[in-house]
Image (cartoon, rainbow, N blue to C red; front, side, top):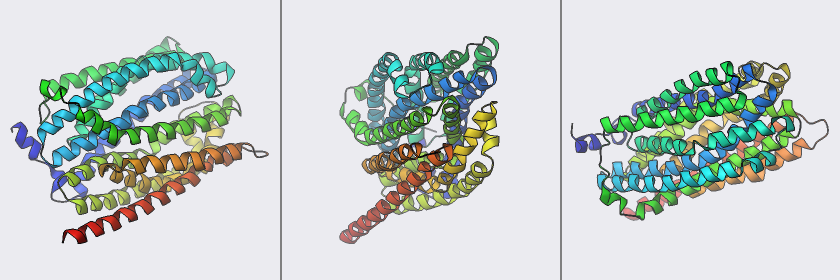
Length: 455
C-alpha cells in the first residue's frame, strides 16, 4: 500500500464510531498504565528498599518533574490536533510542515527546560516544604531527571505524531520498552546497589533514552504516511499554529499541576508521614484515572479528524460514547478508592502510618472518580475542536479558585487531617464538570445557529 493510500484509509471518518474509538483508546490506556508503572515502580521499589525520606524525595521530586513534563505534553496535544485536522482534510504537505515545526520548537524547549530545572532544583524543593530529612535526596532526584528532558521531549513529540495520524499502537510499544528497562534498572540501582532516590532517577533517564532510540529506528523502518523534507523546515508558520493550539493546554496543565504541588506543600507541612501519604495518593491517581485520560487523548485526535473532514455530528456522537464507557470504569474506581484505600496504599509503602494516611486521603478524594470520566471526555472534545483556551480557563478556575483555597482553609482548621484536606479535590471536580457542561451547551447553540445560516 502506498503512502497516499495509507494516508486516506481512515476508520475515524466513516462507519461505526465505538469500535475504532475503543480500538484507538485501548493502546492509549495500556501506554498510560505503563507510564504509571514507570513512575509507580520507582516509588514502590524505593519504598521497599529505602527509608521513608527516600519515598518522600521520589514522591515530591516526581511531582516537580511532572510540572515540567506537562508543558511538553500540552504542546504535543497541539501537534496531535493539527495533524488530525490535516489527516481529515487529506493534506500531507501540511502534515509535513507541522512535524518540521514541532522538531524545531521542541529542540529549543528541551534545551531551555534542562538548564532551568537543573539550576532551580533547590528552590523548587524549598517551595515544596520538603521535610528536612528528604531535601538533599529530592534535589539530586530532580537534577538527575532533568538531565533527561531531551528524551522526555523527544518521546512525547514522537508519540503525539503517531496519535495525530490515528496510530496509538506504536506509542504503546515505545513506552513498553521504557517500562521494562526502568523496572530492571530500578531493581538493580535501588535494590542491589542501594542508590535510593538517585538510583530511581538514573533508571528513569536511561530507560527514556533507550525508548527514544528505539522509536527513531522504528520510524526509519516504518515511514510515516507523509514526508518531511528540507522545504518543510523552511516554513515557520506551523510553529505559531502549534503554540496557538498547544500553549493554552500546556499552560493549563502546568498551572493545574502547580496547584497540586501547592497542595502537596500544604500537606508536607504536616510532617514526613503526611508527605509520603499524599505522594502515594497522587501516584495512585495516575493509575486510577487511566481510562478517562485515554479517552481524552483519543477524542482529541478523533474529533480533530472529523472536524477536518467537516463531520461535526460524528464528532459529537463520539463524545457521548466515550463518556458512557469512561463512567462505567469511574464507578469502579470510586468503589475501590472509597473502600480499599489501605490496600492501595500498601502497594507503595510498608510503613503502617503512611498506609493509613494514604487511605484517609483517598477516602475523601474518591468522589472525583465519579466526575472526571465525564469531564476528561469533554476536554478531549474541546481540544479536538481547538477550543483550548476554554480548556485552560476551566482548569485554572477550578484549581486556583476552588481546590487550592479550600485545601489551605481545611489545613488550618482545628484537628484537621488528610480526610478533611482531601475533600477539596471532589469539590473542585464538581466545578470542572459544571463549567464543561455549560460550555458544551454554548457550543451546541452556536453550531445550531451556524447550521441555520448555511441552509
